[in-house]
Every structure is written in C-alpha cells, then in structure tokens.
Amino acid sequence: MTNSNQVDSSAEPPILAARMNDTETFDPESPKIRALQKRTLGALFLSAIFGRASMSVGFVVAALLAEKILGSSLWAGISTAAITIGTAFSATRLSSYMSLRGRRPGLIVGYAVAAVGALIAVVGGDRRLLWAYLFGLVLFGVGQGATNLARYAAADLAVPSNRGKAISYVVFASTIGAVGGAALAGPASDLAESRGLDPLVGPFIYSAGFFMLAGLVLQLFLRPDPLAVSGGLNSVESPRTAGFGQGVAAIMQSPMAILAVVALVISQAVMVMVMAMTPLHMAAHDQGVELVGLVLSAHTAGMFAFAPIAGWAADRFDRVPTIMVGAVVLIIATIMTALAGEAPAGLMFPGLYLLGLGWSFGMVGSSALLTDSLDGVDQVAGQGAADVVTSIVSGSAALVSGVVFTMAGYHVLSMIGIVASGVMLVFAFWRLRLEPTQRAV
Image 1 (tube, rainbow, N blue to C red):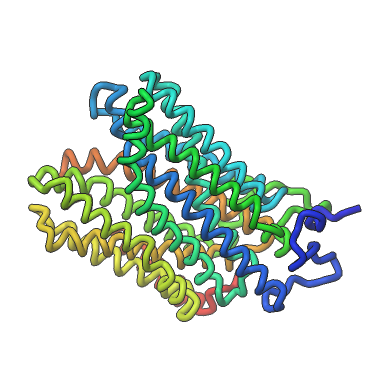
Image 2 (cartoon, rainbow, N blue to C red; image 1 turned 90 degrees about the vertical axis):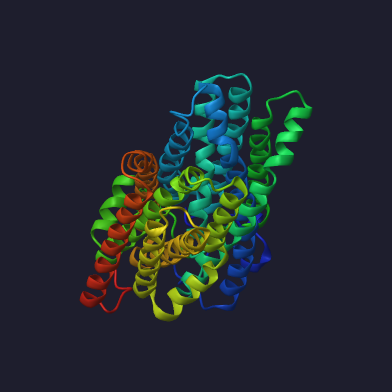
C-alpha cells in the first residue's frame, strides 16, 4: 500500500522516479534533489509570470469597470475588496488542499478557479450585472492567492541556507508578468471592442487565458511534486488538514514565526495604503497620467526587479536583518512621500521606488523566516494562515487609506506608514537580541 507522502512514479520524470520511502531521509544537498530543485524553480518561474500577468492585466480595469456599472466612483473600491476576499479565502483553503495533495494540484486548482472567475467577470461586466461581476472578481482573487503561495513551493526542496534565494527567484518572475500584463490591457480592450463587447472586459479575457497557461505549465513541469518529495504532505499516521486554526496555533508557538507574520503584514499594509492613494494625490496636484504611470512603474520595479538581492541578503546575512533592512527602507520611503506635499517628481519617484524595495526585502525575508520556523504540515498551514491575515489586513488598509486620504491628507497616510514600519523595525531588533540564532523553531 502506497504511503500518502509518496508520489506516483508512473507520472513522474526519471530524475526522481518515486518519493523516498519512510526509511530514507530527505536530503536537499543530494545531487538528485538539487537537480530537481532547478527543474522546480524553472516551472514556478514560468507559471509565476503567467499568474502575475493575469492579475496585472485585470487590475488595470477592475475599478474602472466597477465605476461604469455603478455609475459613480464612490464605491468603485468594492472591486478591490472582492478580489481581496477571494485572495484571503483561497490562501487557507488552497494550503489545506496542498497539505493533502501537494503543491501542484493546489496551485492548478487555484488557477482554474481564477480563470472561471475572470470569464464570469467578463459576462457580468459586459451585461452590467454587478452581482455577477463581483462574484467573478472573488473567484479571480483566488488566482492571486495561488500566485502568492507559489513562492513557498520554491522553498520546499531548497537547502535551508538558500531558501531566501529560491523564494526571491519566484518573486522576481512577477516583474515580467506585472509589467507585461499591464502593457497588454490596451490590446485586450481593442480585441473585446472588435468583438462587440465592452472594451473594459477585454483584459479579463486575457486574464483567463494566462491563468490557464500558468496551470498548464505546472501540470507539465512541476513533477514530482516538491511538497511530496520534501515530506510535507499529510501522512496516514497524521491525517490533519492544514486549516487556518492549525496554522495560527503553529505560528503562535514559534516567536520567529510571529515575527515573520508581523513583518509580512506590515510590509504589505504600508505598501498598499500608500501606493493606492498615490495616483489620487498626484492627480490632485495636476500631475498627468503619464507621470503617474511612470511613478507606479518605478514602484513595480522596486517591488519585483530586485527581489534576488533581497533573497541573497536573506541567505547571506540571515532573515531578521533582512526584515530590518526592509523596515528601514519603508521608513525612508514614507518620509519621502510625507514630504511630497505638492507631489514633486523629485520625491515621488524615489519614494515609490523605495516603497516597493522595502516591501520586497520585508516579503522575501519574512517568507523565508516563516518557512524556517515551521515544519511539516504546520509549515503549510502556517504559510496559508499568514497569507490570509496579510490579505485581510492589506485589503482593510486599502479601504481605510481612502478615508484617511480624504479626511487628513496623503502626508498623514505616509506618517501612519512611518509609525508602522518603525514598529516592524523595533520588533525585529528585539527578537534578534533575544534569539540571535534566528532559525530556531
């Protein structure tokens, strides 16, 4: 009888024909595992490009289409809320499924659901059916949850000292997808219009196609499943599912895991709330759309393009110092945006670039630390729970940022970012002083 941690050798390539049996020990240093890790990273890299492109091209028009359906911009942010709900819900559900079946089935299911959601959004948007459009966006958000979880799959087979590099490799792939996806919004709109559809639904048609390509890449090339090979699947003797409650419990038992989640949440929340209001702030000071686009492009470059440097730092100097660097960069970034009262390009460009760079260091460092701090099913459960909390808090930050911006101004929003980043820095420094050996569970 086959152990549930084993991989069906009939479907796997000869590089590792079957999962090691219970008498063997998983050794990430072995030549076979190292070769398999290269193959795994290649598959995840390519799928991440398609996954992020799907999200990027859809995000360009999500709020605009909501505004058109509602006839007002007052509640256009509901589109972001719908996507966030899908992302948060899927993080724990997909993690639970992965703990039983593996990374490949979980990611493929996530992308398949998102592709269906994108097509539902097309129908809802074209026919002005708000309920259908929002339901489609919730399912569409599942794709973002899958794309986020893919970074953890990169660490399953990695040597512990190289986990940061492996995670950053997948995050870096998002650069290509994010930039390429946004650039395709125009052609996608033209295609939809030529077919008699609302131009704004065109990007969602492209999103569905990219999600399907991401799933196809994983189906063909993510073999054998990295979570199965590393021994992270549920076994017959331990038939637990990686649910949200289990993930939270596992995190709370590890001080370093708690730090990782705090850093994840603050990095994401600060980045989202400042970035979300940047176009409105610049528009209020007569900055053109082209300049806004260039500033946001610089921000995207900071988020993804230099992720390999963050990964190298996390492996070379360890996780907590990397998180601290992220916090310092976020503080500098939000100081710059707080001072950009009239939205001068001389402060907005470096401010938004550093905002993305600080997020990158915080995200990569904390993701690697979280993976180090948990084992087995607890690791998968903790990763899912961390992404749920991060999605909920960042979504709330995006909604609250509009209120703060309207009532108090962009500078106050930036000051909140300074304080939050300072809390992240102090907490990381405190944990480092208490536990210099960071990787202790």
